[in-house]
Structure formats: structure tokens, C-alpha cells
Amino acid sequence: MKTVEEIYEEMLSVFRQETGAEASAVSDLSVKLYAVAAQVYGLYAQAEWLSRQCFPQTAQGDWLERHAALRGLERRGAVKAQGVIRFSAAAVGGTDLTVPAGTVCATAGLTRFETLEDATLTAGNAYVEVPARAVEPGMGGNVPGGSILVMTAPPVGIGGCYNPAAFAGGTDAEEDESLRARVLETYKRMPNGANVAFYEQGALSFDQVAACTVQPKKRGVGTVDVIVSTHEGMPGEELLEEIQDYFDQRREIAVDVLVKAPEADPVNVAASIEVAGGWDGMVVTAAVRKAVQEFFSGERLSGPILVAQLNQLIFTTPGVANCTVTAPAADVPAVAGTLPTLGTLTAEVAE
Image (cartoon, rainbow, N blue to C red):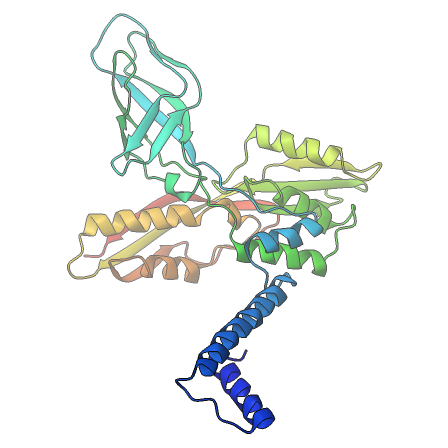
């Protein structure tokens, strides 16, 4: 694209050819020509931007979403992380204590979580565990175990809270590149209401679904198995039923569609870590554990677990000077319909 200076020089050249005179650099005419050149440059920039939005390969933001809409797709929204919060009594007593739904707890960094249902800490019990989710959607809600320690408004008689396990499943809204890849995939594999692409794109239209595997004729002729995983791993029954209803209304005639969870394949991971100078070993190992736990997400559905990937993941964790992955001893091969999950995790600082 031409610059303002190039356009301005062309205008001076045309003026010189048509009039035989020179426009002085300090003249009123020169200033006006430069102002016009700037406006023409703006038109060039606008035309170039518009040309990029005309094609899904280069479109951005709302314009990319319009291309997606033409292919029957939508940008996947952000998802809230979910987990469990454990509430304990302030003092041993003989009465039941109520933890109402909507009780808000937070981390030291003020990431807030709310309980999803009413719960009762019965007399004589030390604690009660309540399902909860992040108040705000996004990856910021994926916090490690033991990090939720504050109640914004403690229920009567409740003295403490914490999460015994990590909160997971929180994802940010789908980025342009991910949506662009899905849009372009529809051109490579045209969904026709009966092929694998139709079922894959339908399942991936749900915000919670991270990956999908379609197995035609798995249970015989006229059957289709749709296996889905979520960002935190295994899908819940409510999501499976929702996707099942979706396909029951759209499947072709005389086809038996079954939406189900994948089979879990636990993978034990062990690594020896060398800590870089100036870093605390406990902090580094905690960061490594968190990175490995996040790696084993639902996106691994039907995919392999490569030792090289684990080595790279751990080695690039801040504070790691070197590492050796001792388990798994070899690559875990991909198996259709199987989700590799994290079994035992051992991350130790090398002696």
C-alpha cells in the first residue's frame, strides 16, 4: 500500500506536469495537497482492511463471526471453572448449620467462587463439601487446591472454607484463530447432515465441549457414536443429555445416534527436576504440577501422550533448569474414543 509521502509526491508530480509550476513546500497549496494525500491514504487503508474482512482466512472479530454464521457456526463463549469447596464449623456444636446456595468465597487474589446448591453441615460432622463454580468465566477460575480460603459473607456458624482439589474447566472465549480453523474446516469437509463432519461440528458448537470423536457403525450398521470431552475432562450427564437431544432432532432418518463420554486411560507421570539458581524448589515443583495437570485436559481425546511433549512442557516451566521424565517410559499411543487422564503425578527436585 502506498504511503502518505508517496501519494503526496505523486500529486506534486501531476501538478508540475499539468501547470508547469512548482508548489513551494511552505505554500498554502502544498499544505492542502498534503491534507488531501492523507485522506487518500485513509481510503487506501480502509479498502485494504475491508478486503481482509471479505475472506475467512484474514477476517477478524465480528467479521469472522459473520463468516462463521454462513457456515452454521458460532464463536464458543467463555466457560466457568467448577469444583468443590469444603466448609467447616467455627466451633463444635449440637445444631445443624446451613450453607446457602450463592455463598461467595475467594482466593487471596480475589478470584471469586459461588456455591451452586444449599448444603447442611449436620451436627457432629467436621465439614460439608459443596459444588461451586467461578463467578466470572475464563481461565482465571482454574485455581489449585487449597487456594480458596476466604468467605465474603460467612454463613452463620461457619468458620472456614477451602477447596480440597483444584478448580478446572474454565476457558476463555474462543479466539479468532481457533474459530477461523473451524470455519476453514467446513470448506475442507462439507457437512451434509450425515457425514462425520456434521456430527463433529454439531458437538463442537457447545461451549463446554473441548474435543469430539465420531465413530460410525461402532454398534452396527445405522449407528453413530459421538464421543465428547470437556475442558476439564469427562463430560457430565447433563451435558451428554443436552447434546443427545440436539442430535435426536437433527439426525438422518433410521440412524441411531449415541452421545457418550470417552473411556479414561490413566497415565502416570514422574519427573526429576533441576531447579535454576535463585528459585525456590517448592514453588517450581508446584508450577510443574499445575502445568502437567492442565496439560491433561479434554483436548487430549483420541490423541497420544508424547514423552517429548511432557519434557518440553516441564522444561519451559519458569525456574526449571533441566528435567528428566521417567514415566511414562514410552509414548502413549492414540486410541479412538479414549481420553488420556492424569494418574499419579510425581515431581521431585533432583538430588
